[in-house]
Length: 73
Image 1 (tube, rainbow, N blue to C red):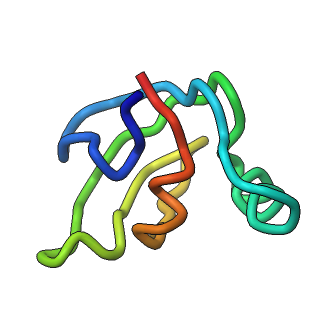
Image 2 (tube, rainbow, N blue to C red):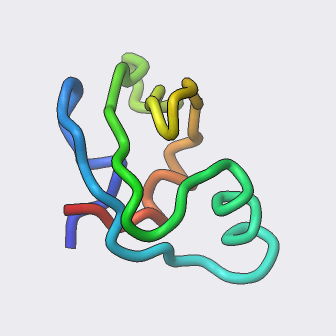
């Protein structure tokens, strides 16, 4: 299982599954990250937090904890 946190900078990945419960999962889905969507990893901060991605035509910064909940391939 690879998560968005483990994806390399410059790669495009596809969301397989969202982990997490309740409000956390809902917030991730509200940001446009749903099953099957393509995510381009733009940048990762020096300490790994946050991760900057492009999804559905806009740029988004995710905390490391949130990126670990997104399973990708």
